[in-house]
Image (cartoon, rainbow, N blue to C red):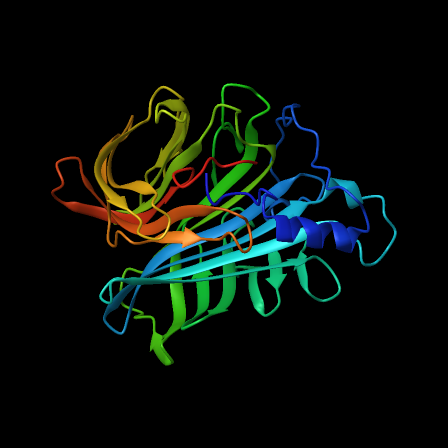
Length: 376
């Protein structure tokens, strides 16, 4: 499912966008038509899709850096401003680019967070078509082909994010082919066919580089099992009117398997839609149906900042088995109202057997719509 799309609810950003575009009202793209099924092509579909309304490139991971367990999240969003597409002015904000980053310091029991936003062009920001190359100021995520294998099989990524108190300088290398979510990359997100996205993942990324924390550069331990997960998703319409928000997990298992599960929630916490996938090393992905995934909360945490109450431990049942997902730090709520206008929870978690016993892997849990309804 990945990170929340910019909802344009923040009045300050609305005014800035209108001013940059030279228009009196911000018109969102009309939705309601279904995305056509098509074959995703790589490297083309690694890049931006500026004719569609919203898009994100989302990386989460966990590393050992000089003996410290750290989790990280970085997300770049692109959002199309429909009302400015025919304007000729170089100052028109045709596309907006946003970015979020967070670092979870497990030993220090804290999370650091940073965010940015800018219009595309003028050297401020870009989301390039044709391949992954997203930039916002001096923050970037870029893909280069690996030395062997097809684009679908082999990639290398470089990412740099500098926030208040932390700096991520990361290199990520694929160890597995692209994982197409849904039906060959077309992923349903609701009971209506219009609610869908083009969606692929790259699980089990090897991570190297360094992380600077409180001014101290920590080299990522090359002998540790450092793994990350990349999602790239693009859509014109993602949320059903009844949906309050979503719960999503992307988990790298220690044996090389990859688990995705998500559900869209109604305001009463019942499931409106669900899905996900399971892929064991060297095997085809098993795609989950909407009735095959359940999320059952086991433990809750209340944010002192927003007052939102989040389930920070879940029992997630899928056709590939049942799993216990438990936060390594409860306080992993992100306040992104200065950029994308929402508050959500995004954090590093253990993946264990359903009885809470053996550790099977780690990954990230995302929960939206707990502080307020997500509006897309």
